[in-house]
Length: 313
Image (cartoon, rainbow, N blue to C red; front, side, top):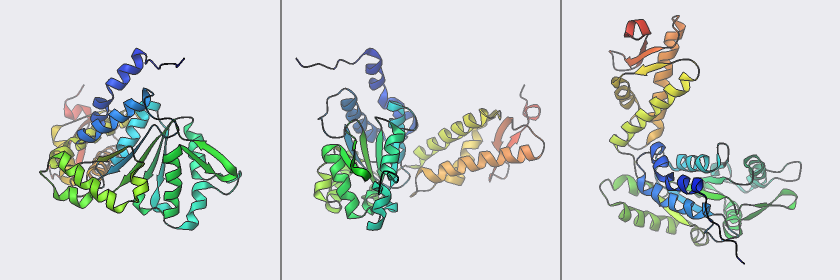
């Protein structure tokens, strides 16, 4: 008799509410999140084929649009922190680097085995910028996607069937940047065609879902700025530096961090730098790192007004 997996209410609620939770932290990628969340729901409900990873994704799009962030966020949401094994394929562009990946002996197990053990029995393996990898590395990836297992140093076999696999690539980035007003499905179809031409057919054919990410427009980057300022305020608050931010703070961050082609990274860096610069200046001048954060009159930086000066209690 077959044992039917019937999810409990906790799991049902967690999976039902997964898309909006992801949309709160990965901005401007609603279509991509919908595709990924559906496949994750399949995997967590036990509906996927055995003997392979629960799902494998190819994330396509420009730099700084949330490809790696989405992989990190869904992994943390489903499994908890520290359960993602990230491999930058620019580190494995030559054949001699293969030993770093697979190891050479039990004493030198390699990065995949080390990351596998650190993550535990479930997680996500992320191959970042897959087009940079040496062809032999892609052969290894084919094995993982096809049978959900990988043989590493010492003839140890790692079981990746309870895992998710994510491959990221900048393939199609130029097309996406040029298609500013296009319907998402049209863009997705054209970028998928680009990926099919550039990637090995046997690799592309083993991917569960090819997901195309939008470019981040000005409004979305403004939302990113507000999100990062809130996150930075929360983290600094945990250190005892509590402050409220005026509306002009986000405007200043946008002016310093907006970049049409580089996406959210410059915005994140600008937000962190500007907030920390203001805290540093306050602390070095004898303040406590608390009060009201506002835009400096010059519009080029932020400043922290002490609670008494800012009219806080």
